Amino acid sequence: MGEVVLDDRRLDFPFHSGRPCLDFAGTMGRRGHLDIERIATGERVKRWGVEAGLLPPDGAPGPVSEHTARQARALREAIYRAVRAKMAGTAPDPEDTATVNRWARRAPLPLALSADGRGLDWAGTESVLGMLASLARDAVELLTGVDAPRLRECAGPTCTVIFLDQSRTNSRRWCSMDLCGNREKKASFRQKTRPNKG
Image (cartoon, rainbow, N blue to C red; front, side, top):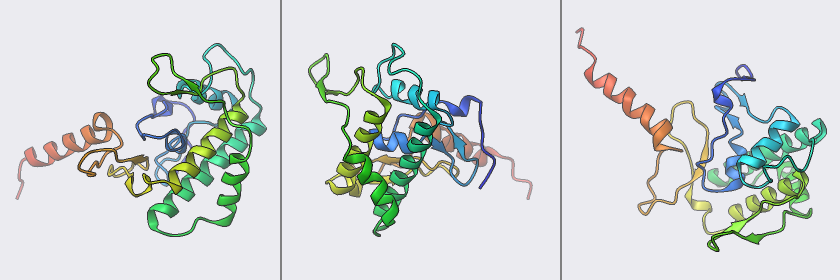
């Protein structure tokens, strides 16, 4: 494992996975390369929830304890490993299953109709614990549902984001064309235009 990065622009939260539980799994970035921990504190857990639209932006639900932050990271890792096991066609580790199920049994954030009437809105004055329960339930639904075969890992050489391929051709390669896809295109262009010294 590499160094743990604590503060730079790489701590921005990515939201291109197509499912809340996968976006949550992406709060550990570049696994095995840099190990960018994006939810190192309780406040970072809450900030992720706000940016994900699962918690209200007005400061509720108040401070998040370090114990809750540790619980959030443990759930995140259990979700990530369970998703990787699904992608590999193997059973998840029993401890990961138990962690996800324990959270999925808790009271989730209540669902509500979004303001535009087109989707679900989980935001409200609910707790971080409710958010974690909702994320666990989202993982259970994903892993047992029809979308599971569309799980992919970004093709970027150091990106470990897992996303749901919702393309019509089922051939999406990048977590984001603006990020990893664009970087790969630039690298490929530089390689093609590099003078041949042979």
